[in-house]
Image (cartoon, rainbow, N blue to C red; front, side, top):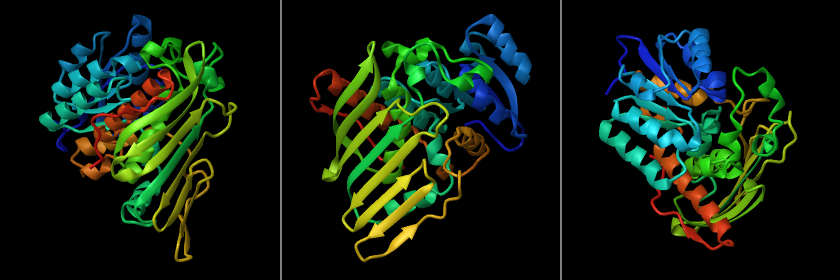
Length: 360
């Protein structure tokens, strides 16, 4: 198991594209305990550009050459359909791994990564930044400790400003100033995980599962799309113990606006609402008490730095509780999204999730 406090952590990045160069690499570079050892992506000119700009010691279009240098930590931010191969190889090389979401497009591959990480004794994290926002551990503890009693119904809805990502060739206005522009093939090819379900419900589903600890059994879903790419999805979930949930989302928020992420939980003893787009969380109990979390303006605006920071801290020996986006949650989420899409393709027929675990 690599990663000790006696020397700098050697970091490698596989898939240095749009978000890797925009978020992951700058966050790593800002940590004094980290040295940027290796970077990989396709395209010789683009690879040289990212190597020279950020000062990586080594660069190759073949990710295996990076891993042969035995990095301590690896960030996998390649296209969705390549996550399993890249994360698997990094884990087998003994590195602690942060994998972009969705973790994989196949539940069996996602659980394979979980099992490999356990066997190697390395940390596996998924890039789910909502879980790393302020007050989230407190909120999770309140739910798990029975603030509203056992959860009987849950709802999560996410409406993001991503229509121009998943449809057409405009893209986001903010991309005009990013280091790289995203490849349309990653976001608009269903065979590669293009579409809203994989691209955005991979935020909402793990957030719900991590907060509640609910273990899904089956999903029934529907989808709306253009040119075979889903732009809106809805679904119902049955959990172990009988609780039920509704999932919904759409690429419908106009550009320049904060994404709408909301979770409602109904329990035996009350109700909880968490409105991430409003920095607001309220708990109403049957005994008449009302509690509000003291969330500052803008504290719940999404960013992706938290998982990268946690990867570094865990590799330096930090407590495993720092991992708020564990592989178990990521793999279970892959199972839910895969079942939702399979159900949608079959007229809404319920589809079993298969293997699922509550996050430790």
